[in-house]
Length: 174
Image (cartoon, rainbow, N blue to C red; front, top):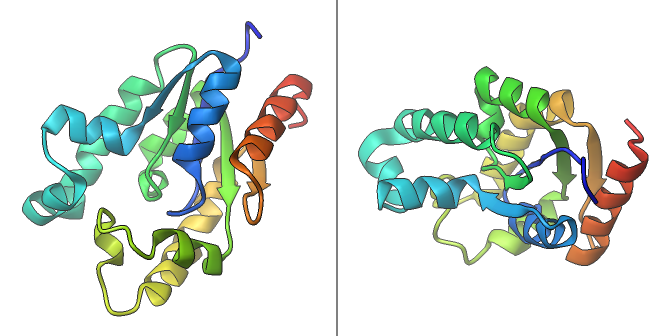
């Protein structure tokens, strides 16, 4: 499958961006990169620590640099952090340098998939449901704005969604 562009996966926490991205990279023979893991690798610190020490603004600055650099690579599937699309520069890099796939997920699925994850600073609260609702109200339109393809991940297997992305890329139904 040569000559296919990079794939950048966006969507909220718990949509399956990393799991589906890994599977998609295998199918395409591409390198898989998770922007949050890349930030942790480069800084030698986990995301909650970065948020504690530098705040969300410090984290977003690091994220912007990483996304700008990674989107210039070839043959990659990049899973982005849920809030990466907040910054206009990130949206531009993603939209201009590859195919953007927005993975949608219901609020119930998000809550279920993120319930035990302590590595999500924004969800370390008494009411994660409220946080997720507020985040999708702000971020949802931004995901839609840059998406070439929008796929629902509710009750679907990782392989099924990854295969649908490959099919979309081959037929380029944009």
